[in-house]
Image (cartoon, rainbow, N blue to C red; front, top):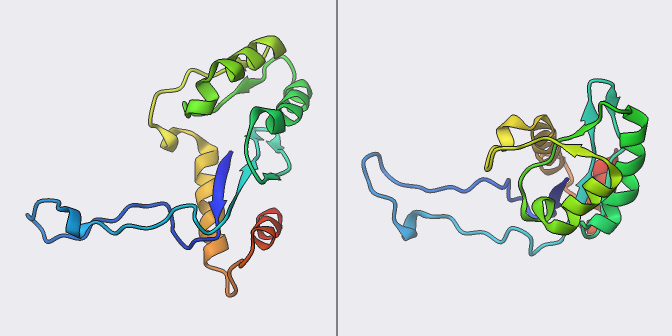
Length: 148
């Protein structure tokens, strides 16, 4: 899953300084990441294709449960869930859900989004949304733009 915001923030931190100059607080560009409204999306990819994109006002196991279960069943016994080590993913309730469903999750190194192919998809989608001629102005417009 990923969060998309109405803000034009591209989720990259920037520090402006001269070559050889030490980082200083005055060189850091501050911005509000989620203050302008946001949606969570969930989607899956595999060698066989992709799932539909699901948009949520808030992400939670309750929202994701009905999506992961049928996808795992459709893929079959070789299904292996790939998710990062975000706090909600490693929480006991999430781990218990996966165990109860018989879903194996891939062991994942910390802080390694570059290894997860769907992270590149989220980045492409975010750039596409914010490079539109007319950027979404409401959360609903953002959700509609994401599923197009």
